[in-house]
Length: 132
Image (cartoon, rainbow, N blue to C red; front, side, top):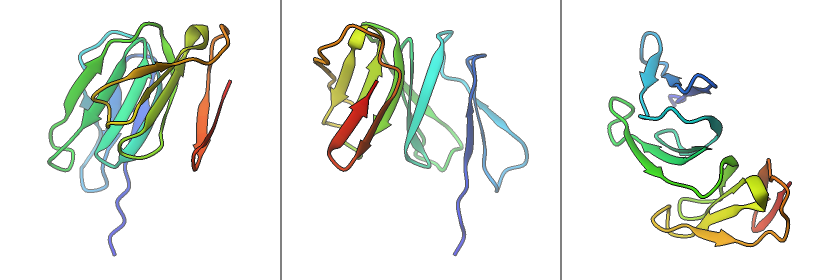
């Protein structure tokens, strides 16, 4: 069985860089933004979400040869993102903001957190989540 390993680096210089074992060297994935990036979460090796001052869905349908980038504007900067499954994704941000999708990112809704402090992290186990 061949193990697929992908390394992805998210840094503050606004670049996403990946390296596949079958490639020689690193590849820069341009996502067309100058915004600050904070967090990344994979759905699978060729589909991921990245958040910061905007929300990005990045995917490849050809094993990483080319990448498609979709950008979703956000009301506040986002600090962390968690992919529960291919349809359910939750992200948290400044001023107590929580955004959630249950349709794979087509539509996002605001979820009340009941706080106004910045939320820096989110995680789930089964259907139970925690953020703070």
